[in-house]
Length: 581
Ligand code: SRM
Ligand code: SF4
Image 1 (spheres, protein in one colour):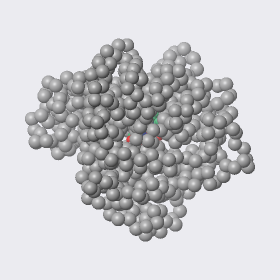
Image 2 (cartoon, helix red, strand yellow):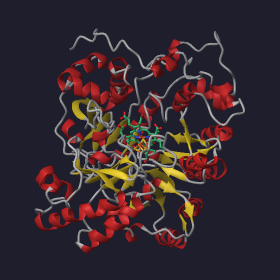
Image 3 (cartoon, protein in one colour):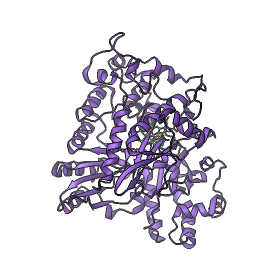
Image 4 (tube, protein in one colour):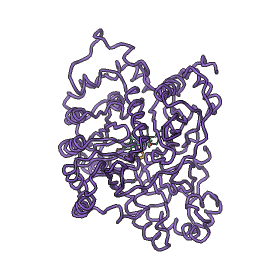
């Protein structure tokens, strides 16, 4: 086992000081919530993340502000942490009403099986967060330098295995939830903390006063259904199944997508297999990895503060050896296991217990009513009628579960009468695509994403149809900046905001998510994206080998041969995140 006495990073970033002085995430939040303004200070902005909310600016209104000189329009995003994306009908209906009364009347399903509210005003933050807690959900730790929402395989097949991974996700989420009472004081019971009334070091036995160096994300999958993108997780557990029982898990560490333009020390990275553990040790292992990260993550430079950089810098043998000291035992090598892509189960399917589920494809996770498209009303009607349990998928979709055998036609009629296309009426490329929110809410967005992808998909659908490629599983993911919130660096086609209306195009990933894509060309205006891809798709159609996906074909050809197929004058750039894989 390795010596862990080496000194962790001595320098500390400003956020570390804010955390340390915050008295377990209290800071000045209460006073600032009541100060009559529409915003909070920089320190409270940092601390509020741990409570599940981000101060944002409405960036559409910002354009007006420049012209009129009006003050900026401050809004808040509130994120619910929902392990495995599992909700009851009552919870869904309550969230739908919170969106109506306190947010922008939309619900946003996230790429980590959570739900976000956008456009919440400061005066409504308390009622929103309290309302979420009244449904027995929480926002605590949905953001911030702690364990984030724990993901797990979503499809509600009653095979005994999925129930086990959900139970494991719940157990990890509970064990790694922040223990500070600040959340209850501020949002729930109103009692103030003061020196000497009991908040002490033992309130955060796992995290300590300064919590983690950065966010930390965990996912659990069954190997035949990698819907959670296990290779993108800081910590991934892959179930090892014998005789229809989960006997243990392979532990993968170090996945992450984010990178910063012009900073080659930052890069997307795929999680590496580290070891195997018996099933009963999953919570203990999660705690061990979190503690290792707590002590060895970079607390000086937040851009390099993820566990992927510990794995990349140390390599797997050293990482495993240090992990053994945290786990307290020697660790076995990972077991051989074949991980397969997510199973596509859109629409109506048997659960295996006499009941059915219906997987609704939600474009970019946005549940809204807009003109003739009234998805939010349709879902509310269906949830009120059938009282299903629900699952949010890692692909920003919603599954209505536990339905009676005769519900299908009612569901499809309701969707259609609300202007919502059923999954059979949508193309595969749309169902497999994802975009992050970006503008107007995300303060880090450089370019449009959620609002831009539908138009790009429309063009791509037409080309795929023309080329007879519409049944191919081509995954398109778009983000408004390189942070990678829709996991674009694992997809067949990744579109990443670069500068205003210009994007970097990546190709070469696939649905399985086990391979980073590579940079094809840079600074592409949005209207040129599909025309640039068309020659590649044409060549793919002619040259592909049997069963070869588009990303596989791109990888076989490599960047140079692909670039030779591009129209004249398309800008290339040397740096590719695949270099870090
Ligand atoms: Fe993310 C920051 C939205 C999943 C990597 N992410 C943000 C913020 C909070 C912007 C900010 O810091 O000011 C975005 C809020 C936008 C808005 O208006 O809502 C944001 N991230 C999202 C969501 C909503 C995207 C979506 O389309 O669903 C996802 C919420 C998940 C959840 O329920 O918890 C979301 N973010 C991800 C993922 C995917 C995943 O976890 O599987 C990633 C890539 C994996 C990873 O963590 O590396 C991701 N988000 C980032 C990063 C880059 C972090 C890094 O260390 O490289 C940032 C920037 C940051 O943290 O400073 C970020
Ligand atoms: Fe914002 Fe960038 Fe994440 Fe998109 S990828 S939500 S633009 S941080």
